[in-house]
Length: 335
Image (tube, rainbow, N blue to C red; front, side):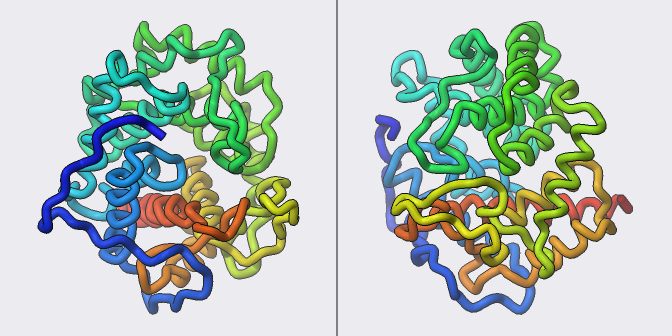
């Protein structure tokens, strides 16, 4: 966890904390942006205040997805300010892990792309910093806590960096400070075996914004692999995207029910890769997302590791929002 001062709270700033993530919650009749925003605000703000750290399963994806649900409200601004403060003071308040720097820089960059469309000076400073900790092989020393699919292997850290620097506004990827690091990053991602389909989906996402990671045949192969894993109901399930064991040693079921994270990720990335909203995979995936939001505003996803908190539900809700947003934009633009 990061060492920093928690945000002071007044009665007016209290954000209700959602109930624990559990399966079986009643579903909404139609999807609600308001409820999605309320759930995401509740988990991200309270996590940031209580834990004073960033995580791939909660406030990092929140930073990216929340502005797409409407105004950049005070809750989002508070979380954004937390990460900006971390990035602005890494020289004195040292980052605990290299992964903090990579994830913070990447999510600030995608956040900039999803809001102002301009690269914030603090974001640029954060992105420039990641190259100072890049390993000789082009990768990064990522958290390896045995918590798949995020805090599990170095390859995911390289993917995170690639998505962030590729998406960063103002053509950051062509800047002199990034050129050499990006070439090493491309080399790492092209020459290192991708561990599982989950990571290949992220690689497909990265390749949209950072050319040279995949050729057309590799791209088509990943799209086909994603499509094969789609369930009859239109969704995807996370256990089918890799081979992971739970903390008690039991296997994850690749035929488990469809979930929010896998479905949101698949639909979002397939759209990023150019599939139209009319494509069967997208159309049925969107239908699943619109009919499987729960009354609390979340899309449930069971943890690959244990059932104590199912925190990946938080990321799943963010990716469901990303997917539905990109498909709604496509309808408006006729694509």
